[in-house]
Image (cartoon, rainbow, N blue to C red; front, side, top):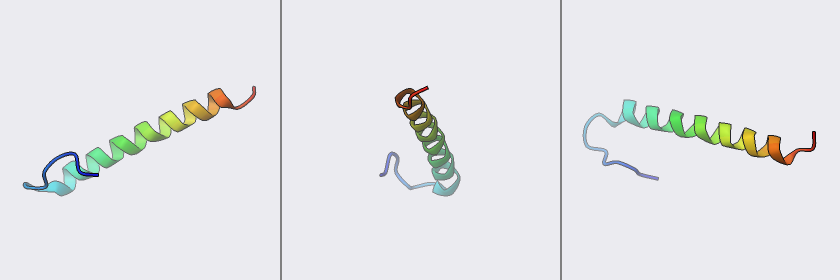
Length: 39
């Protein structure tokens, strides 16, 4: 899943984008599971 060209030093930008995506995905999963699970 490429969102930007890998021209200039892609490692740090890729790491930041991946960590941001992982954080948002984890938060979304936690929210959805918390809302779906019975209290």
